[in-house]
Image (cartoon, rainbow, N blue to C red):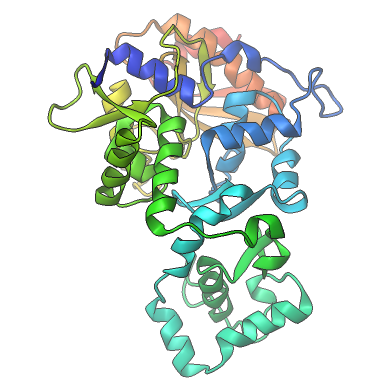
Length: 408
């Protein structure tokens, strides 16, 4: 029998499954030495990543690089170096293509090996193979002999072909080897990837074990997606690990038959679309959430899902011309209680020591003073975490007057 859930219960399950339910536990402030009085530990950071299953990596640094933010949203003020330590010193997480470019727990390397092995050679790589025979093998040999290298440090890397994403020949080949698993990311400095042989990055106990079949890997990924999201439809869970909808649905139905997950019916969701939820007991009691969410936070990155679950229409406007933007360049949804109640356009003005709120907008039906008071506290905490002295405001948005008053 399908589990019947109200819309409120579905929201609570989604929030709780993402580790966002207890906002009060995040109130840890940094002291002048950069430490917290009850410091977030590296184990807490690792456990948070494992609960989410993955952490999307993004280069935009208008406020803070996106992969650092979900941990702040769940744990409060923490030392960002802990994430780098897990990835590049302890090597307990690794970079791979999952939802997108993501950090993933290293024990899950086995679940992505079939995906790496089936990587399709892009046309650009075929052209390089034709024009520079042997260069693909030469890149591996250079790294084998010289150690971890950036793409620009490779002999024969060439020049960039066009602006921004116009990769050099070396970068195209390095990314090809990264996608098929020959190379992994050993380090990042100033966000540049240092590529090394995978056997020198991924510990042997996680690299040399048996490799599941594609079906087995996808079934386990769908189980983890349901655990991480709590409730959703097949497209939600497929999107979480970039598994095609038909495969996601087939694996989810197998998990239902095995009793690992169960079907669900959610009030107000479209009829005729199968929904699924975890078979584990997840409390549907009220949540105490309070968090600003990066656009690439797992709770909000699937825009169709958050509209269905939270009745919150959200689109990132980075690529929209400035005059046509409704809310701003890099807008953070604000989660409070069990609703997405506002959105704020943020920028870290590091030279001025200011976390600038360029725009602040409250959602219909929510009390502006209550939202502004909680948002002001969250912004102060975020500014402190980023090493900024104060929160500044702009003029845009229907929440700005109340927020400005709350910050005073």
